[in-house]
Image 1 (cartoon, rainbow, N blue to C red):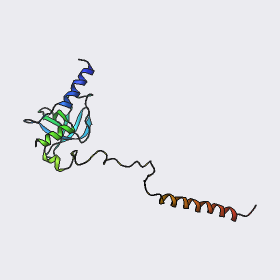
Image 2 (cartoon, one colour):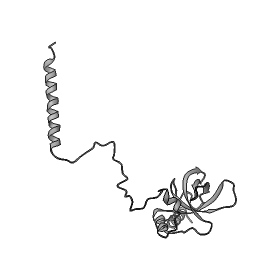
Image 3 (cartoon, helix red, strand yellow):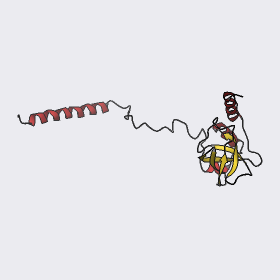
Image 4 (tube, one colour):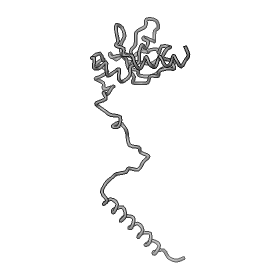
Length: 165
């Protein structure tokens, strides 16, 4: 199987599959990347441990701080306690919440927002590199022009006050 075909299948699996944790599997939040495909994760009890990214996801799917994944515990190894089984996306998290299978510990902290609570436009901050543009009444324009006229009178007065050299 070529790399492109493998990438296509892995990406499709992540996007389309809805995995509900069964048995020893659990949902954890990624806290940080530690290198060598290891990530620091936190479970619903607040315990932190390392999880490993399986070979099929490496260089095909990326996860970042704050993402949620389904992990399965592994017995071997002292530091690495689990392996990632599935990466959860927003629509998958939403369906888990609707099915009441989402850990309450992650809801209480406000880590995730539902689509109804906030929109993408509300999260945008104004660009500080742009001048503030306000649409208002024409009275603002007359105030600006009067200040300009006053400034031009001042320059005339200063040129009159200067002695001839």
